[in-house]
Image (tube, rainbow, N blue to C red; front, side, top):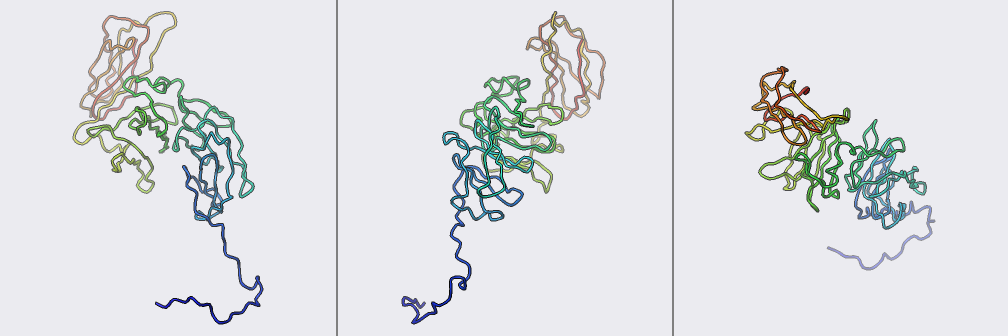
Length: 349
């Protein structure tokens, strides 16, 4: 190989700067080492959160991040945690606040505080849902920000678990720094850890139409850690990445067994109370299709204790089931079983 260390004997230096062509671009910097990336916006701008700064690239140039293409959002002691697009506009979350990022490009972006009740507690702790708003994780529950209002949506249904209490087999929340939110079809999935410093093993699913809740823990010998969740749009399925590197499909209605065992399930109503007297139940009715189930049991619960239970078989046999003598201040109905079954309704009197 020949190496040239001596310049050419002569060269033309009479050409003007304009004749030499465009200058070399010197501001196509590498992306900053931030904590969260989101975008692109409608014009191709991507965003990176680093400390309390929001960096942005050149439009349609995700490889080019000029050093001065950033804005400061909030105080340095409150760094950014997450960001989402809602209604085509970017929003920036700290643990305590939400900021609307107003503007369309360099030197035009400005953070506008939304005066929300809280922010997001993790990078995946905020999500935009069309027609509903932005749901985000607060330190004491899930919140919905919509129409410039921030409302807690778990106050009535899940308040005890956000205090760390285990209720009816639902583990209390111990750590939200690794929690995540994900929407799939008409359901919102919330994963959280019941151990400090751990990753989510508990999943609460909320129906976005009627706000009904379900709770799941996946187990293949030990509780499965769900570190990531996403939608496989090509195959129309919900997949998770576990703590050991496996990718799994969940919410598959065609699978009614866990390996070779029927899946166990249970559902329970809220506690009903009467303002002036105790409950004196005399009979129960269950509207349940248990024709394909292995076992289904209905239970009447008084003051948190099972007062009477009934075995349910067949399809939608709604005859009365007598209840033993007893009373209580609070009453609830619980139906549990193994194998596929459909619960329509239940009542007691």
